Image (cartoon, rainbow, N blue to C red; front, side, top):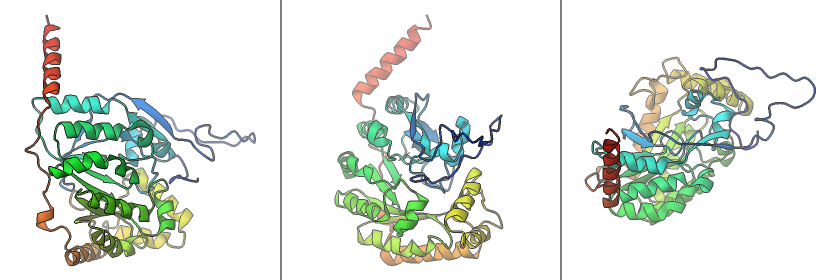
Length: 362
């Protein structure tokens, strides 16, 4: 399907009923997923917006996600299985039924104003891209950035969208106080491959331009080579890192392809459709890097893998970053947490809400 990563809508693992399509000759098909499925925003009010984690594999313990589901349609996205919790499919539903958290900014203000809150770096859009196409219309990410700026709260963003340039005014001001940094994801330099892998994300050349724009604006910027797909995208690793460094990036990271739950079947189907002659080789190298499995969720291994091929990737990346002077100590740990403060008007509002709640007890 043009502009979509997944070609079908597999059942989610929590579904009580399984439905199977049947062609009776009338050509009606699935009204929600025809030849050109449209994106449907699902407006939602959330009870909480900050998600916490204890994973040693990521450099943050909290994140905010303005959307659930992602219109970019990346076939390899590790977040696809989360749509099953909404009784929707990790396939086309994930990229066409997008939950828009319309009260996200107001909820974030409340949670940051809590007396028990302790500041640490906030990842913006860790589960799905905060700058996916729907953001142009709804602006939820922009609202979240405005709240974080008001609270002088440090943030880190990972995106593959050029839309982040819209918010340079906020990010630039925060970066002056060491409160913001950005990573741009680049998985391949091949535009044809990128169009198939992540059909609605920015083209590789455009993502590199974003790195240069952010650097020129004084915003600490890095490149994330992710995912690294054996025998499909891994050959571009050094070129991506070198190009990003030449454009001013000071940080770099990489993640080996992850295939949790339903993503495994979706990715294998995608491989057979687009690269049938390479499919067996790609899957074989993935299994060699995951102890003869397609996925390993073990902390410490799920992002990097194990075995000879995974070790080779690590050595290649380490050599490239050291040669280019990336990830130096003076470029890491830049973000400050000591500037965090609740704005006076927010403190008064919180006190008023607290008093109202107390009075309601009587």
